Amino acid sequence: MRKLPLAAQHFWKNPPLGLRIFFPLLRLFAKVVFFFSMELTPQQVGFLAQLKSQGFDVVAFPMYENFVGVRKGNVGALLAPSGPTSFTLYGEPSYLVGGQLSARMIQSDGHWFVRKQDKVEVTPERTAELDAFAAELADALLPIA
Image (cartoon, rainbow, N blue to C red; front, side, top):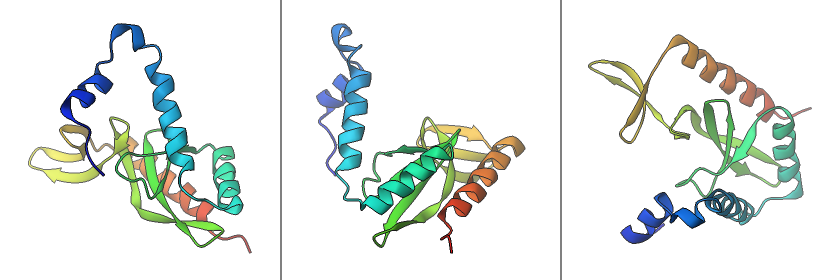
């Protein structure tokens, strides 16, 4: 995927004052159009609706256009379409830093969830939130016999 030219990136980050009220709507519209450009079966859409009813939010994470993002609270994960009726977990759930997926890192000054230049310290509360999300998502992904 190509990056936007520098001028366009600046425009999206700092829109003119008169357009600022419309940008949240434009971003939402872009996410909806982007999300539905992925071909999903009615069964997969039904599964996503079921996840939504369980408190998960279905989102699109930039850079991962071939996957469906799910989040709950400050934790998110990527789902890959798997056959005509289901999804599988792609990678592992991660803590969200700046609204984006992060990586867990060990540095000289401690354990961190890192996303580009942003980092958030790994705490027992955040680890518990991540573990609870992972368990709940794993239960939701299990096939019902």
